[in-house]
Length: 223
Image 1 (cartoon, rainbow, N blue to C red):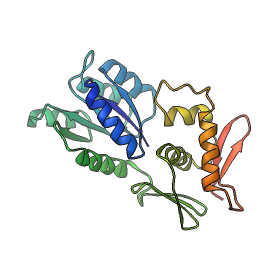
Image 2 (cartoon, rainbow, N blue to C red):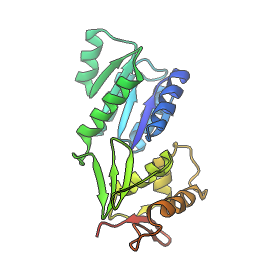
Image 3 (cartoon, rainbow, N blue to C red):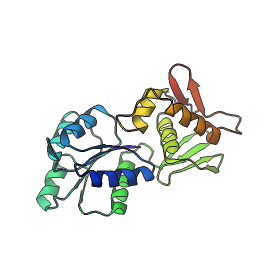
């Protein structure tokens, strides 16, 4: 799943980004309100972590604008402003949760998991296609009940394909979702990850789960 972190303190943003990537999330980071709003309006995210005190445009203004644009991506406010009035204002403006700094990373992860569960169509925390099963919360993959070990990026690629099963996903779309917004989609990195995934997920099985649609992209079909 893909998360946007809007945080002007670069050390804090880097800490959050690294920690979330270790938990198998894909993460974009913006260091000011203007860039954060641009990404929130133009990219697809499963969750936004939003500071309130930002250069150029504050967090409340960003929240108002994305909600006015009918973007209902879950928003978790993460800020040093911890008065009751601040919390009420943030939640009333459209935030889904509010966490004050300093914070425990374990608590941040728990709140993220809760928001993603609440917003997920997969209420049982699993994604499945045929005998391939992905455990969202525990970051585990099984094929025919045998666990398959994937790297975080491989897991992210497979999860995105499963969330869009029966739809062809272009290389560009896949790279934009998995990597940071400035990633160059013209490289062959996605093809490399798909080949690695196939070696782990499809090798030795009669049915090939990951399919290539020539000239278009990749597909997981749920037959």
